[in-house]
Amino acid sequence: MRLIDQLQRLYCLPQQSGHVLPPGAAVTAPARRLTAADLERGPAGEAAIALHLTSPEGYARALVIEFARSAHWPQAAALCQALTEELELPAPAVAVGGPAGYQLWLSLAEPQPVAALHAFLQALVHKYLADVPAAARRCYPVDGGEGNDCPQLPPARLANEGWSAFIDPTMGAMFADETWLPMAPNADKQADMLAALKSISTTDFQRALAQLQAESAAAVANEPLAEPPAQPTAKPFSTAPAATAASLAAPSLGSQFSDPRDFLLAVMNDAGASTEQRIEAAKALLPYFHEPKR
Image (cartoon, rainbow, N blue to C red):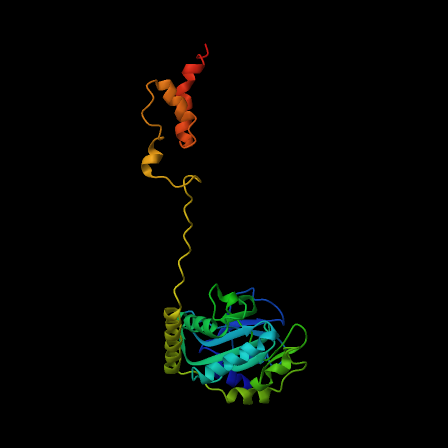
């Protein structure tokens, strides 16, 4: 089948593994080697085919960005345009249906290390999809086990009896209400659509990744420094008028007292003395006025 040939040309590893699932079913078992006959069951409406994108050696040659809400078609379309015009990469395939509202499928001519693919996807999201909530988008390949790393390959029958399919990007807005087809797409037309697509060369991928990383670093360097937080104003020790250190050290009572008790009484009653000084004077006077309890 021409369609299977194109799917393998663009997105499959030399020994592609994945899952053959009933429509709408989740991945529950380990991935296994997929054959061309397995892949044909998707367009035939017999099963959903979930590709495990990462090889045992940690390489992948397909990138998928999913938008879970049809309301985010403008962001998906803008990303398609940025990939071709700003990053000068081949156009991705656009699909509707599956677990997401829209999917963008990017093909790599040669498998690349997954770490580099994660960096590329992260940079794309940071620059172009910052206004799409994390819960409404997903990028593959992902970390966290093969069950989480398996986007479903269009075309295929969906749990709602609709169909996922690759579409002409200029028609993306037409699926804002229902992001699937009501009937099976024509396999030959799907094959023709994919045949027009090119894979991203290793040179172009590395150039685009370096460009995104350089732009991200420049944006961080040009961000204005945050102003330091305002320092709280220290509260004065007393709400009384400011006084000199000498006046705070002792009350200004002069030297007219010869009797210690009279001096302590004067300190205790001096409004200009500090509270601590007046309390200490009162404590010192207690023996003069009260006999100790027996």
